[in-house]
Length: 209
Image (cartoon, rainbow, N blue to C red; front, side, top):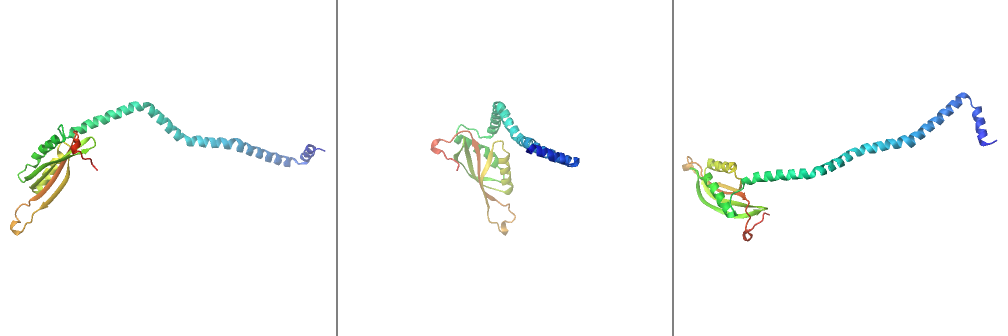
């Protein structure tokens, strides 16, 4: 008897219940094989596709922006040029740094002219190149009161031109009992700077470190 014949004989010898259990086991094995060979790869593929969605969206977004990039870049340049034009309204006038220094001196003169202030010296400092601009500065030595100094600093800060106090040193004299009723006088050294579009000449060029 062949192997197939012996297998058929064994199957016929089984009871109906045993045949049902055997068929159920075979079906379970078949279902597991289908899941392992078909369902699992499909699930893995779905998970990989879902994980790749953010990256694919980002790539498409970059391409979309690149397509619109030329117009966006032109718009950004136009906005930057407008902001630069507005900012340059705050630079000092003058065709050269020396003229800008003189203009700065003229701006500061009415700020320090106060009844409680005495200007002892004023001088324009050498200009310093700052990229495409030059910095002009004026040093002033003066005697004033606390209120006078506060008023001058406020005047510099509120001026339409872009000015900044680069250096400030303040000292006061000695006051004894005999001078206790006198208003305290401050000895002030002040350096105020502004920017100009004129470049420093080569022989006087100094770069910021």
